[in-house]
Image 1: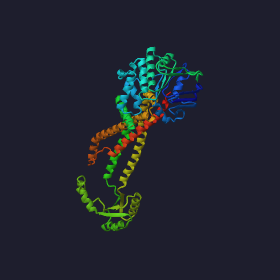
Image 2: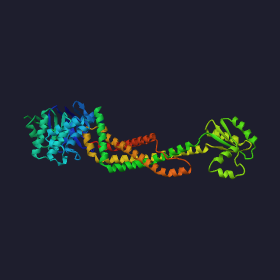
Image 3: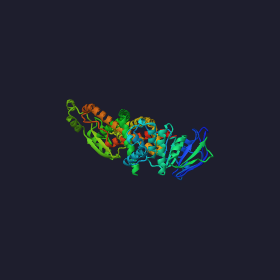
Image 4: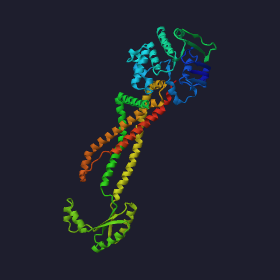
Length: 229
Length: 302
């Protein structure tokens, strides 16, 4: 499903964010990417929907070599990847409902089907009764759940999340992890970057997970620990 | 295909909502464009009217030949076959001085003056029509006739009509220059308005790109905006010109009365109005395209 082979990523200015990273995430897996901030977790995630491109090596997503993908094909790749951003990137000039509609609107889904799917996504994250609110009126945990609803409304086969539990207290973080566990159970491939070990443990209590660890841009030699419920 | 149509529909709806959400700014933009377009459009309407007025007067290739006052009947008559023999002459009409005087007596303005004269001040005359309206040919024939005996004055009647026509042609060129210059005003207005919109929608554009919006989906509403702004501005220009012509017509009617004419300034023909709207729409689109191409490039999300 996701395959990195000898990936190097160097930012302009010479900073090497990723060095010779190779990894495979199989379909339906829930993989945690651990590491301190600055270890290259965000960079690694950004290579998947082509927010960044590799300098060398290859990234294969759903059988497509995205490192060679032409710019006009990128939007279609992104539609099949649910992204949860570190800074959430919610739009505060519109309602919760309209935020979830956005991925559907940009692809030209019929508004009636779109509304149905948006409500289903909101229902899944428990925000259906807040659809008319402005995201600014939501709590931190609710905002994160909204971000998740927006990421899954297109029913992507891959979900990537960058620090989804950062800045959330333990209770909210647990809710979020339960959601990811639920998506994993229905077969979504999930890659979560986090430095929150509690989150890993929480999800591991529900579904089979795997962890990878990045250190200064390199995957550590120790194979990730596996957990099963 | 239906998704594509729906994307267009949504872009259009979003554009209308955007225009309506800032009615004052929209109105000002439309007025700026309208005024910029109204200047050349108005000048053009005046030219079209002037041309129509000039067309009402004979533009036929005619030469008037006036004999000397002391020319005898036989001398005048001797000219006629020579005129007919001249190359390019299609028709020759003799106007004896007596007939001309009678005609003038009938005219209400001149009748009394003519009656007071004790001798006929008018010469015998010929009206010569040529088969072609070529200016050089007219001049050549006129020059030949001038050398004949007892011919006093040879006048090319269509000369002033052609002078007006040439002046109108120059006027048209002026209108074109004006339109070209003021088009930049329209371009600048759409360019800047859309630049501002892109800046205020920075987040939405960035997030949409991350969520899989294609570049054309993101650009589309701005194109619609530019075209709509152009169309509204063109419409405003039409209204401004119409109002100005109506206003001027009150004065024109008085002026025309002095010339015993019922001349009125007419509004632009529908075809020309359509062309102005189309031109404005294309310029609006171009302004949007320039702005979008220039500013959306900075929006590759990071």
